[in-house]
Length: 455
Image 1: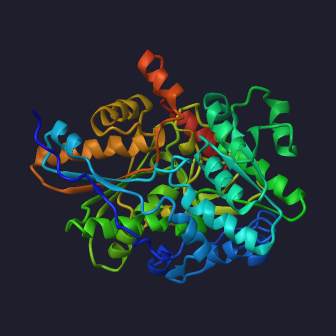
Image 2: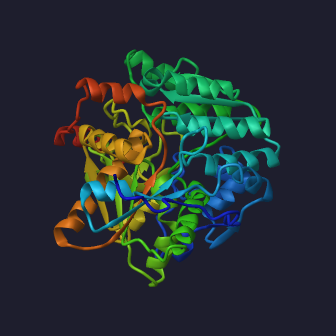
Image 3: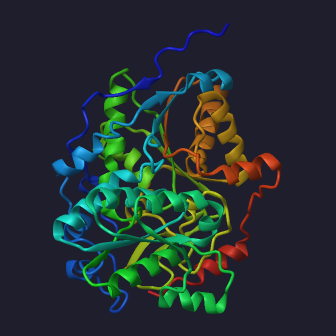
């Protein structure tokens, strides 16, 4: 009979953080300013307010260290927060590693991911301003589902443009969004000028997050008293997701732990940015020196193979330009199952931290090895992970084995951003042996980077 496992799950009762933390307040240098696509000059607040709620625009540019979480948002958070911190005893034993592995599980809500943390906040600020309706994009569907949930709660109509390949691969995600009242379109669609132009050139275009963003913003700008909402990349999104890292630090302190490694999957950056927030504050202020690892798909490697340059955040060139690690707004990623990681660029804040050496390392991993790690984790930790989260699992396993080789009893924290309940088509592909591991050629990278604006 196996040895009894100690208590695995750490909660913090009602100790939900009452403030978000803004990592930019402690950065030695700020990321370069966003540029207006019409003038190529730094954007002003007035350039952003037609797209986003005014309070979110203020949060986008503020350097205030802590922002109070509105009581209405806290009321919603209390339904699913604090999220559990779990020690992976079974995985440790399987790997025979001296490392201690913890994961912060954000999949314990209907959206199945961390996205609800910012969705609730964004809809709250739009509702408070008196906005009549909202638009957004979604990749794998977690973000669209989270925003649909928040919009239903605050009674705000929502239109979602879902990347076509995910729309086809994950039909039940679409139904969850519709159940919460959202209208969902496959992107590129015939609903917008951007979508129609793309389909005219390529009727079978599988879509991208950059395309879906363009369609959602175009719709918002053309619809009276409507605003757009983004689920990753931007500073105000990172701010709201900081609750993950704040909770994580409190929970680990309960067992006298502090991470030597903090690992998160990276698409646009919201999960990783949120998880590492409080620990990055310690690094920036000289209190500790954790090692941060961003894990991205080998099929969409913006950190590891992209350029650090100004680029459009969308295919239609409607959005402001941001200086970030990017593969080019014209880059169309292959149809991997981790739809939430198929964005061509990375958060400007995380890009700056990576460029300046505070975000220590980025690793790109292939789809098959990601699912090997996911299945291993599912069998031993009783949670079926989302494909996006499984990138972090893969790196955590690798780091634990590296610790074993060196005989180091390090503490590893990774973000389990979501569950894989709606990703069974991906698991079917893996189990049937039909899953591909896509490798980009230098020519693919060069083609994407050729679309960068000349600034």
